[in-house]
Amino acid sequence: MTTRATRTKSTARPGGTAPTGAAARAVAPRRRGRYGAPAVLLAPFLVLFTACTLVPIGYAVRLSLFTEHRSGLGFGGTETVFTGLGNYTRALQDEAFRDGFLTIAQYCLLYIPLMTALALVLALLLDSALVRAKRFFQLALFVPHAVPGIIAALIWMYLYTPGISPVLDVFQSLGVQPEPLGHPLPAVVNMALWQWSGYNMVIFYAALQAIPREVLEAAVIDGAGPLRTALGIKIPLIRPSLAMVGLFTVIGSLQLFTEPMILHNTAPGVTSTWTPNMYAYTAAFERGDYGLAAASSVLLAVVAAGLSFGVTRATRSRSERAREARA
Image (cartoon, rainbow, N blue to C red; front, side, top):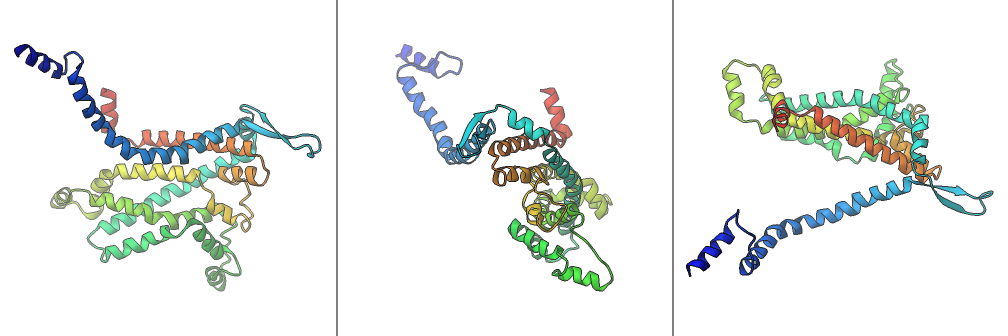
């Protein structure tokens, strides 16, 4: 009896030998129970992620390695030919594709600081004790984001078009002749600010609400005014939210498509290849060059991944960097 108890106890020790026989059969159900529930809960996400993300990416990569050649005068049909990195070389050598990234860079330099500053100021105002009817203003500022992007772009195109815009008519009655579509970049930035500032304001406001009230009360007791409290306490404590908004904004800016596509037929400065997404769209659906469109899309995804990694590294807190250095 003593020997059997000792043997059973040794199999239960973490550093002992692997359990065998009845002990192994008892441990196996516990392991299946430990990993079974997470597997069942993650299965729907993994299935959708594979079907909606991994499979399309794999198909785009495969498509980017081939091109279609027409034989003879085009009456003999088309032939799919493996080109390797040929489509990527064509895209990188195309000046229109490179100019699209230059447009995106200018857009980011103008849009990201304005949007972040506007959303942060609105969130700080809502978080202050001076504002009444906070729920109403939260809803009112968030409503533009609830409008579908294509509907918002159509509304702004109507407001930008001379002759039918009531806003431009008011300016013209005052002797001012504005041309908002003469320089399309500020017009597109204005459309994005109208749609996304309220959304990011909600993120900042939620982060401000999570700050312990004791910290703010201690600052008031120490004599800090509202401006000093906002700059010295509130903004540093919501740095992770600032980093997250910056990351999502960079990714979203690279995917700029709806607003310039709507303005394409109205604004002379918005060409069919004004952004990388528009370049891929034109290559696929106007020229029928699906290999080039897939290659440019993959290059855009690579640039987005690289920028995401760079923004994540640049916005990490000092404590995280020190902890990683020690590790």
